[in-house]
Amino acid sequence: MEVNPRHVSDSAEQRDAEAAVIKLLELEVGCSLGEESVPLGGGALMKIDAVNREHHILCEVYSRIGKLKGSQPDKLASDMLKLLLAESALGGAWRKIVCLADTEAAKCVQGRSWLAVAARQMGFEVKIVSLPPGIREQLLAAQRRQVMVNPGVKES
Image (tube, rainbow, N blue to C red):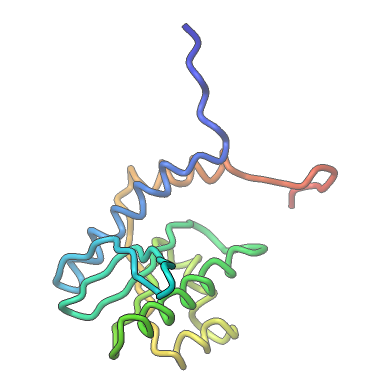
C-alpha cells in the first residue's frame, strides 16, 4: 500500500502553531479567544483568527519564524486591514491585536517601517508569544520544506 507523501506546501504545522499562539495569547489577555466569521453585509463573511466579543478583542495570528521576505509583510498588512474592516462591521472600538510567534518576524510591524507606523497610528497592538520548543521546531522544519523559488532563480 502506497502512502501519499505530504505536499510540500501543506500547512498543518502552521495551523498547529497558530492554535498554540492563540492559547498563549489567551493567558496574556485573560480571556478565551475563538475563530469567528464576521458578517460584512451582502452575504460576505470574513474569518478572524481570534475574537472575544465580550472584551472587544480582534486578533490575527502569524506564525512565521524568521525575517519576513518578499511578499510576507503584505500578509501582515492584509491582516491589519481585515481587523479594521471587522471593527467597522462589528461597531464600536475594539482591541486590535496582531500576534506573532517570533521577534524577528515582528520587526516589520515594529520600529520605523511604514507598516510599523501604520500599526501604531491605527491603534494595533503587536504581541509576540514564544512557542514551545517542540512546536517551534516542527514549524521551522515545515518552513524549510516549503521553501519556494521561481524556476531559473537562484535562492539567496
